[in-house]
Amino acid sequence: MKTLIAVATVLVAVAGAASAHQLPLGDGKVSTSPRKGYVFSCQTRFPANAPGAHAAGPWISGDSYDPARKPTVDGAASWPASLTISLEGGNRVIRANSLPRHATGNFPITSSDDAYNYDRNPNRIREQPVVMRLPVVPSTATPSCVPMGMIGFALTGTAIFNALDAGGRDAPAHEIQDRCNGHPERNGQYHYHDASPCLTDSHGQPGGHSDVIGYALDGFGIFGLRGEGGKTVVNADLDACHGHTHEVVWDGGKRAIYHYHLTAEYPYTIGCFMGKPVAQPVRQAGPPERGPPPGMRLPPSGGPRPPWRQN
Ligand SMILES: [Zn+2]
Ligand SMILES: [Zn+2]
Image (cartoon, rainbow, N blue to C red):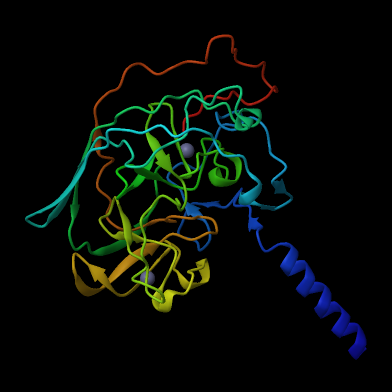
């Protein structure tokens, strides 16, 4: 009997090593109340034929996926980013054109890009002027749901969305992003659904807590992947909204304050708002939405998902 147990342990260890790069797939983890490891989403019904990636890639197997095996949208397009953040009275005022401070892939995704086999994002990145007035020191409130679209703003000058694609699935698992883990939605708004390697995070030198990488629409900070002692944060370290409270650097000083963390695992950014969110920031209306690209038609019902996206 002892021998059998020892063999079983070895097998588990080997399986663990083999799946070191696998992440659990978040599909279906959408809730109508705060729940750890879920997105408490304001939208809970999703169209079956929603826009998005039209083909499931081989990087998804069963209930897990390997982000390292996903194609990346090619290109190195640069943008005239504009971002200012100022403290005005009790408000942190973010003014931005939503263009990223880093290079992006080429969108629309071109047919010569391997990403095109799975995701034909036809949207062009476009300026989206935003003005956000967030409390400098927010208060916690009854947790509330996160909307589709922007849930926060990153210090790279661009939007952070929740973990869901337009069909309510795990967006980072299904959708193809550029090397900064970003892509544009149908209005041309560039955004991330999860941690971007293009975010600046010194995590306070080795062994330190991550830096703030952006702000949620309730004003609380979103910090990088590392918690106290430089330890990589996992969902188990966080509450249902994907945050916790301890002393962090806040506007140059130290303050014990609630904050969210990015994690490698779903829901990646925030699961619900722990403070009262401001309304979605006012955006200037852009040019009319692009329809399907030339030569592309809506498939008959039951056919493949239309490749132009909403989220
Ligand atoms: Zn923390
Ligand atoms: Zn998206």
